[in-house]
Image (cartoon, rainbow, N blue to C red; front, side, top):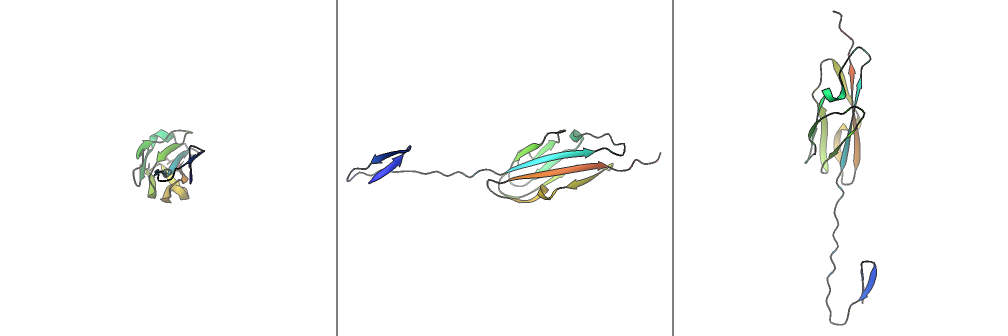
Length: 123
Protein backbone atom coordinates (compact mmCIF):
# COMPACT_ATOMS: atom_id res chain seq x y z
CA UNK A 1 0.00 0.00 0.00
CA UNK A 2 1.22 3.53 -0.71
CA UNK A 3 0.44 6.87 0.93
CA UNK A 4 0.90 10.37 -0.43
CA UNK A 5 2.66 12.76 1.94
CA UNK A 6 3.86 16.22 0.97
CA UNK A 7 3.31 15.32 -2.66
CA UNK A 8 5.61 12.30 -2.36
CA UNK A 9 4.42 8.73 -2.43
CA UNK A 10 5.56 6.65 0.54
CA UNK A 11 5.38 2.91 1.17
CA UNK A 12 3.66 1.36 4.19
CA UNK A 13 5.24 -1.90 5.21
CA UNK A 14 3.34 -5.07 6.15
CA UNK A 15 2.11 -4.75 9.75
CA UNK A 16 2.81 -1.01 9.92
CA UNK A 17 0.15 1.48 10.95
CA UNK A 18 0.30 5.09 9.86
CA UNK A 19 -2.13 7.90 10.51
CA UNK A 20 -2.99 10.65 8.08
CA UNK A 21 -4.93 13.68 9.28
CA UNK A 22 -6.66 16.02 6.84
CA UNK A 23 -7.90 19.32 8.26
CA UNK A 24 -10.36 21.49 6.35
CA UNK A 25 -11.02 25.02 7.52
CA UNK A 26 -13.91 27.11 6.24
CA UNK A 27 -13.31 30.45 4.55
CA UNK A 28 -14.77 33.27 6.63
CA UNK A 29 -17.41 35.38 4.89
CA UNK A 30 -16.61 39.02 4.19
CA UNK A 31 -18.94 42.00 4.03
CA UNK A 32 -17.76 45.14 2.25
CA UNK A 33 -19.52 48.36 3.33
CA UNK A 34 -19.39 51.30 0.90
CA UNK A 35 -20.69 54.76 1.86
CA UNK A 36 -21.79 57.47 -0.59
CA UNK A 37 -22.90 60.95 0.43
CA UNK A 38 -24.70 63.01 -2.21
CA UNK A 39 -24.59 66.78 -1.59
CA UNK A 40 -26.62 68.26 -4.42
CA UNK A 41 -28.92 70.41 -2.27
CA UNK A 42 -26.43 72.32 -0.15
CA UNK A 43 -25.55 69.57 2.35
CA UNK A 44 -22.11 69.57 3.95
CA UNK A 45 -21.89 66.16 5.65
CA UNK A 46 -18.94 63.86 5.01
CA UNK A 47 -18.96 60.06 5.06
CA UNK A 48 -17.25 60.14 8.46
CA UNK A 49 -20.24 62.03 9.93
CA UNK A 50 -22.24 58.79 9.79
CA UNK A 51 -21.79 56.08 12.45
CA UNK A 52 -22.19 52.67 10.82
CA UNK A 53 -23.11 49.41 12.57
CA UNK A 54 -23.22 45.76 11.56
CA UNK A 55 -25.29 43.14 13.36
CA UNK A 56 -24.81 39.42 12.89
CA UNK A 57 -22.57 36.72 14.29
CA UNK A 58 -19.22 38.13 15.40
CA UNK A 59 -18.91 41.12 13.03
CA UNK A 60 -15.52 42.85 13.23
CA UNK A 61 -15.68 45.78 13.27
CA UNK A 62 -19.28 45.95 14.44
CA UNK A 63 -19.30 49.76 14.65
CA UNK A 64 -17.23 52.27 12.70
CA UNK A 65 -17.23 55.66 11.02
CA UNK A 66 -17.61 55.49 7.26
CA UNK A 67 -14.62 56.66 5.25
CA UNK A 68 -14.80 58.87 2.17
CA UNK A 69 -13.95 56.92 -1.00
CA UNK A 70 -12.87 53.89 1.02
CA UNK A 71 -14.83 50.74 1.67
CA UNK A 72 -14.77 49.05 5.07
CA UNK A 73 -14.19 45.29 5.12
CA UNK A 74 -16.11 43.53 7.89
CA UNK A 75 -15.23 39.98 8.91
CA UNK A 76 -18.39 38.15 9.91
CA UNK A 77 -19.44 34.57 10.55
CA UNK A 78 -21.98 32.87 8.28
CA UNK A 79 -25.64 33.58 9.04
CA UNK A 80 -27.99 36.54 9.04
CA UNK A 81 -26.69 40.10 9.20
CA UNK A 82 -27.71 43.71 8.63
CA UNK A 83 -25.99 47.06 8.18
CA UNK A 84 -27.38 50.26 9.66
CA UNK A 85 -26.33 53.76 10.56
CA UNK A 86 -27.20 56.68 12.75
CA UNK A 87 -29.29 58.61 10.26
CA UNK A 88 -29.37 62.38 9.87
CA UNK A 89 -32.70 64.23 9.45
CA UNK A 90 -31.05 66.27 6.69
CA UNK A 91 -30.28 63.21 4.56
CA UNK A 92 -32.37 60.41 3.09
CA UNK A 93 -30.67 57.03 3.41
CA UNK A 94 -30.98 54.18 0.93
CA UNK A 95 -29.49 50.71 1.26
CA UNK A 96 -28.50 48.26 -1.49
CA UNK A 97 -29.91 44.72 -1.48
CA UNK A 98 -26.80 43.23 0.18
CA UNK A 99 -27.11 45.44 3.28
CA UNK A 100 -29.16 42.73 4.99
CA UNK A 101 -29.85 39.04 4.55
CA UNK A 102 -27.74 35.95 4.94
CA UNK A 103 -24.10 35.37 4.12
CA UNK A 104 -22.53 31.94 3.59
CA UNK A 105 -19.09 30.48 4.22
CA UNK A 106 -16.61 31.84 1.67
CA UNK A 107 -19.05 34.45 0.37
CA UNK A 108 -18.34 38.16 -0.11
CA UNK A 109 -21.20 40.67 -0.24
CA UNK A 110 -21.07 44.41 -0.91
CA UNK A 111 -23.44 46.75 0.92
CA UNK A 112 -23.73 50.30 -0.39
CA UNK A 113 -25.34 52.94 1.81
CA UNK A 114 -26.17 56.21 0.09
CA UNK A 115 -27.20 59.39 1.88
CA UNK A 116 -28.72 62.15 -0.25
CA UNK A 117 -29.18 65.59 1.26
CA UNK A 118 -32.79 66.75 1.31
CA UNK A 119 -33.83 70.04 -0.22
CA UNK A 120 -32.56 73.01 1.70
CA UNK A 121 -35.24 74.54 3.93
CA UNK A 122 -36.21 78.14 3.28
CA UNK A 123 -34.90 80.40 6.01
